[in-house]
Amino acid sequence: MNGYMAYNYVVFPTVINQLMLQPFYASQPSRPYAVGPSGSVLVPGNESLGVNAFRYPGVQVFDWKNWGHWQFAYGAMVGMFGSVSAGNQSSSPLYAARVQESYIFGGHGPFRSDLTGWLWYQYAQPDYLGHSYAMQREGLGFQYLQGYMHPWGRQLKFEYMRGNGWIDAPSAFSQQLGLQPALYQTQLYPNVNNSASGYYVEGGLFLTKHIEASIRYDYYDRLPNLASVGQQRIFKTWALALQYHITPITKIMAGYYFRTVDAPHVASNSPGAAVSKVVDNEFAMQAMISF
Picture 1: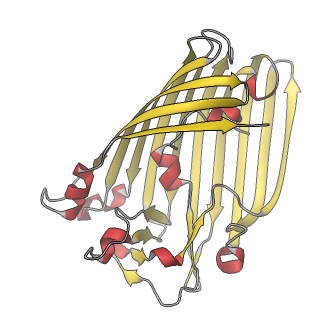
Picture 2 (picture 1 turned 90 degrees about the vertical axis):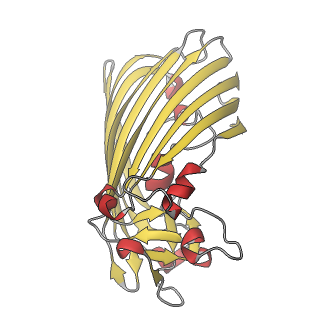
């Protein structure tokens, strides 16, 4: 229910990548994970079952209804918190729902011109050592599209999301000899009182029929409830991109990402401050071919 225009950049916004692209871990590991800071557990890489990428097994119902230029749509799902490859190792229940309202200016399909707003909600109960933990996610947003693949065609999008429980802090480095375990293991904060939130806003403008310039700002505030003990991190990313649309469903994307990480309430000589200071920018290219 988001459409082709969701894929305008090579790199996902940090708020989506960390808060929504949930990794799966062995619910019954070979031995209990080591204890990390502030009630977290340290998950070694060999206990990871991959990233869901929104591929939850389950049953979904959806529908839409048009009244002139107006359209109402909804979707609801009951499923399994786990990927197909993870099998029964992460098979706790998952519930999700989304509603959206659109005003259609013209056109058809994913490239129509419209103004759309939406609300969504997701709830799951991941397992760890036989105990179910609550994981709640919710968000809202809007998108304006006008004149896809037409000179001066434009788009504007905003989405805010937040989560409680089961917050991941991905490892800062790949595992290497000599590194302390906390530097290469994921810190997982399972308790429901942990939280994170963020948003992204992006815009695009077709300079010609085939060339589109895009810009995006992404903000993610992770674990503000643990700011006083130095676990909060704030991620900010500016993205500048160019897209060359060969056909409406085939394009080449190139983007440059200016990335910063703030570590409030940590000592200037701490590992958290050191890691935050060395975060670098990124350039990425990708071709998307659809048929």
